[in-house]
Length: 54
Image 1: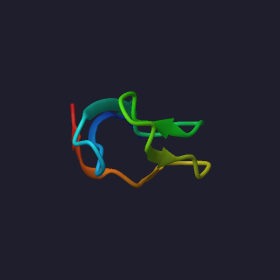
Image 2: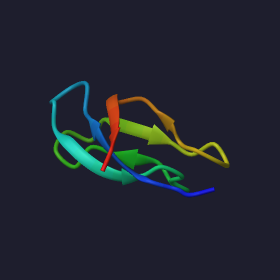
Image 3: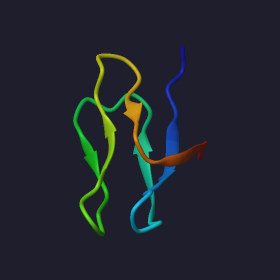
């Protein structure tokens, strides 16, 4: 099973950010601080808009 990097768009400020699909820590937007993803023990739960593969 191969993990990927994803481009996630912040729903608050529309900033696009690259993150790891299986993130082990909470990922926040670098511009406004909104939470984009939360760890779940496997694939991260995405809270941002439209995750696309990089």
